[in-house]
Image (cartoon, rainbow over all chains, first blue to last red; front, side, top):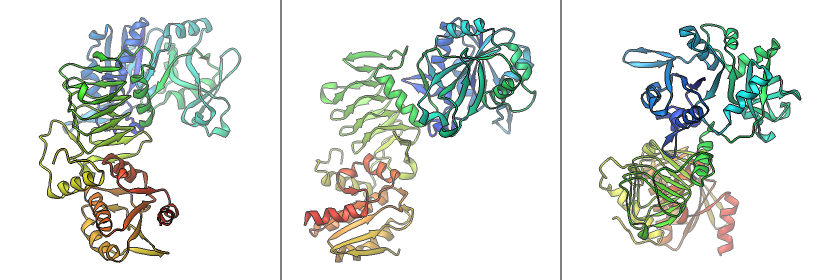
Length: 393
Length: 114
């Protein structure tokens, strides 16, 4: 069985995470979301996976390589060009990606799966394939229900009683939506579908190919198989998914590391005396991290590998990416700290470099700088006014 | 720096001007606010125009509180935008200041305390 994972998008709505990593590489407790997808495909008998890449392509290609360590074969269709010593992105759209691969080698010579590389799913793909074959469909789409208030974020699908698709509405206003059934971006395609994709132009599956197929009366079916669909469409979705993962609510995702006490997992080489820290599970602490005595971690929280959490720091329901130093003055509540940015659960972003608060949050690999006179005064005032004895001055 | 200062009863409301209070204008702000802090004891900073504050801006606001407290006065903040509020929480300044959603609530808090 074959599949394509769509992985070329820029992930603009998941910034600032996607400033430095492509969306499929966003980690779900240390594991890229696309790795979880590849493992899922392998469990359902898929052995040959094509991946279209463009934005930050090397991050994906260098991680998965030929797929051997995941028990599959993988190859990449890069959409762009190399110019003046750098890669230029030239994505061709989700349908255009399939056409490009087909024109290259005729890879899609049997029924195949199409998946977006940025959602966590536990869909029974084998059952989806059975539905597809039973209906003798050209295309089968995995559908799910969403609350009416959310339909404007999705591709709405209208079907008849037999599951045959009658109409698509791409992100319609709530009042115009003709159903609350939406496209999850998980498809089964017959190779003949590719004949309907124009050559050499940018072309989208949901917005262009499907409406065109519907207009020709093609056998397109929707399958409503209950499954967990965790779409990381927005930065706030990411926060919600990690909170769920730490609470053990993401199906099929096991916590990595060793459970050292109820609800506390650790990687290797962590320096921490848990009896001298205030810890409320669930907490994950990545390998080689340091927890100084006197810090507070309230779960669900994720501390990435190589982080340093200083004495006095308070971290609550937060996600701290790799190699971050959280200073003694820091109070993180429902926050994500990643790549020089702090993002709260509602999506508000603080640019740490511009804010000049490296005495609160910094890269743990940078030697700790002595405080400037102004910073020292500020911290002194902060400590006095908050009634705490200065710990680090 | 020109400050918009409004007297409501015995409470002085200062609208912090511009979208940023940072290293580029914190010293200027401290200079401009000094006379207000000398003359008045109950002060509200209306921060609804501010979109960005950096370390220097935080220090300037904190030093205003220190000056007022030293003379038995107090400072309350209102109208904080989300990015500024997030930064205040990150460095625990939300525990030091009385922060209100609206100007009326901040003024009302002074009156309640009286």
